[in-house]
Length: 493
Image (cartoon, rainbow, N blue to C red; front, top):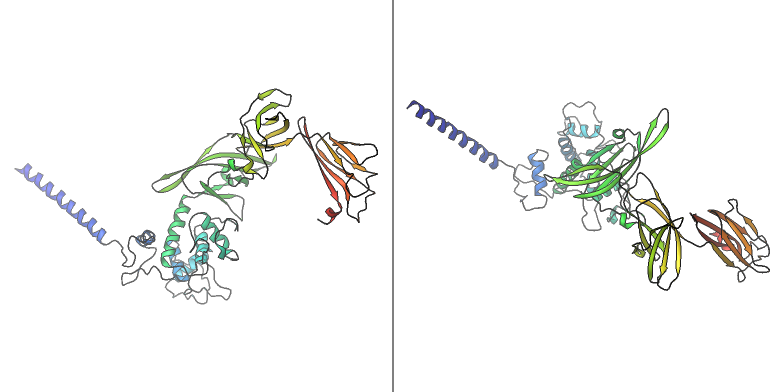
C-alpha cells in the first residue's frame, strides 16, 4: 500500500507541474504584445512586433502603436541606443547640445549615439530632439549604426530621380537600395525629405539588421596583406556578358581604407570572386598576391550564409573575331607554327555583344594562335589570337587581330602636296614604298609599333591631308596594319 500511495503522489505532483507549465505558457501567450492598430496582416506588422518584443520600441497607453506617426530625432536616438545596447547610464561626455539638458528623458541615449558618431547636431549647437526624422536621414543613421560601408552614388544604377541632387544622404540611400533594404515611395521617387513613419522605420531597422547580420567583413590582415589592391565580383564585365555573374553577392569597399571589404549575400546561389592584395616585406619590398573563390550562398533558418571555396580554376574564355555577314563554312585553330589544334573548332555568333559582326571561339589555354575563317564562297581570312592569364582572374585575357600585313593608300584625290614626305618610325615598324610619279603609298608592317608619315609641303593653314598615322600590331607571325589620315581639321579636335 505504501508503494501504491507513493506512485499516486508522484503522478499528482507531475500532473500539477504540467498544469503549472501549461497555465504559465497560456499566460505568456495572453501577455504577448498586441497593438490595436497593427493587425497581423499588415506588411509592417512583423517588424513592429519583433522590435516591440525586444523592448526596442513601444506603443501608447491606449494600446495603439500609431504606425503612421512620424519619429523625432530624440525618439530615434533612443531606439538606436536600445538596438545597439549602448550604455545610456554611465555617460562619459556631455555632447553639449544646448537643447538637450541632462534632465531630458532621452539625454543618455542622445549622448551615447552622439559619442558613437551616429547622430550629430546642427551648426547652431542644437540637436533638435523634437524634429522629425526624414527618410533620407534615417538611411544615413542606419548606415552608421550598423557600420555598413557605402557605395558611391551612381546615376545609372539609381531609379530615384529625387535623390540625384541630394548631397548629404545620397550615398546612404543608394547603398540601402542596392542591398535591397529600402524601396521608394514610387518606382522613380524615394521622397527623401518626407518624415519617416514609425512603421517604415521599424521595417527599415529589421531589414538593415538582418542584412548586416549576414554580411561578412574581410580584413586584409587575415590574408597576411597590408591592404586590398582590388577585387572582382564579375558584375558588368566590359564586352564579356558571358562572364557576368548574377548578383548572388554584393561587395562594398571602404571609402576610408583599403584594408577591409564587406561581402553581402543577396540570394541563394554561387558566384565567382577574386581578390588581390599587397604584402610588404622588409627584405623583398612590395609583393602582390591573389586569391580566387567560388562563394556559395545558402539559406539556414531564414538566414543567408556565405561559404568561401578557394580555387585555381581557369574558365573557358571566348576570343572574338570580327567577321563579315557572309556564311562561314568552318573555322580552324592552329599554333603559330601551323600545327592544327582543331581543324573545325566550334564557334558561336556573338555580334550582339559588340557593335560589329563577330564570332566567339572558346579557349582554355594561354598562348598565341592562328584562327582561319573559311567562308562558304571559299575566301579565307586569318587572325592572330593571343590569350594571356592573370592569376587573380577566372578567365583568360584574349585579344585578336585580322591579318592585314600591307595597306595601300591612294592620296591622288586628297587635297595637299604629297611630293615630299618624311617618315617618323623610331620602332622600325614599317616599310614604305611610293609608286613612281604618283601619290600612292604601299605600307608594309614589320614590327609592333607606331609610325607617322609627314607631308611637309602640305599647307597647315588650308584644308587637306597633312600626314598619315600608322599603327602596326603583331601577334606571332600575324601582322595588322592600320592607317588613318591626319588632316587640317584634326588640329582643332
